[in-house]
Image 1 (cartoon, one colour):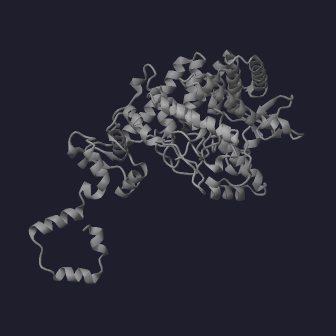
Image 2 (spheres, one colour):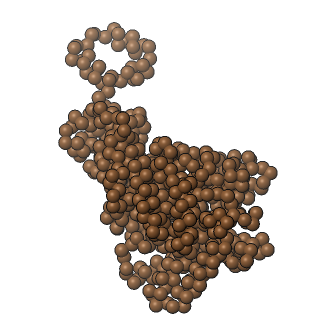
Image 3 (spheres, rainbow, N blue to C red):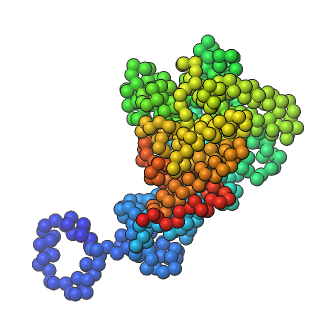
Length: 537
């Protein structure tokens, strides 16, 4: 019986125990042992699974390890994750325990840990349950981890980078099949695979995901091309309803008549997944109409940058959010890439009319981006504010998207690289913005997806030395944090090297896109020198 159980006994029971015959020495030893709680007593099924799977050659190793969290928290995580097999159990132990005498060094190398996480983050096909918010997924998929136990749109591209590096090609193909299935069912890729995400999408990375595929079956190629055309139609549907206001759905008419895109959501109510938070923001934003505030909050969620100073009228306060007024450079860069990808696939399929039509749209978009999303005066890419008729002052990692997709001219790329080095490079990676607001998509947080965009954009623009420097900073940050904690997290404070902060929820472990980007970077020449294997004392 444990000490806690003894303390819970009523007084009469204790009195009866006192009157009982004195226990033998053997009985006393047994009672003391049980009260202290051996590792098997405390961790039960977890302890048995680890030992019987021979995670460690010496059984005493796990028996002597030190928990990083309370036993209750560890067992709750064990029940939730349900790791199966030696590799998955080893990854679980590395996250939640450390060796006696260590300050926190992990049992597995970071590369091994990431590989061991894929079976944990991968989920089987999902059928719908009446009343559940989950959307049907006919094929296996990978989740981000932590509170995110569904598949997300733009997250998945960055997760796939790691899957490809680790040879998990079947998972890439099955995830792509799920995305194509959702476009067929819903007309677009939803933000995530929940019913409450159907009213919006996320940054359109589907074409880039398809570029990671090794499948070239003609029937599958036709199906994927149809999905890309449907996605483009979804983003451009507002062109048919533009009025004097100059914007409808995702489409904005610029002052010269050209069309660009914005983030938008078909609903204007508080988000189901952040209901209380949105109601509070609505109240703080009064007298602005709650419906408009909700639309802007939802549009910010569609951007993936939920939330940051890019979308805030005063650059500081969430109640001033006005996402739908902003014509963002990242979204329009991705739309240009989508149009080029459709044109390329149409040409490969022998459909020259389709190829010419989408090349024409891409050329028109490039002219509009040059006119409105490039500031010659500031020599940088910008977001455009419809409410003021001029660029916003925000300097953010989004300005590297034109380099990533190959849209920037050499002069624009050189100026962008210089600006990024001067204002966005931090000791541990890439700053999201240059503003501290307490929001999670602002300084000092650094994010894996933006880091990958920057490294890829600098590489593509002939700035390989800067790309190498940035990649090394990131890998050092992530590997140091892993060596000290055994954890991969959603975001990092790239000034201090700690887990990131801000936002509507605690920082999450897992984590799909951190694993994917970091794993892909580990194959970069020369990156090994940036890996920290032992926690600094």
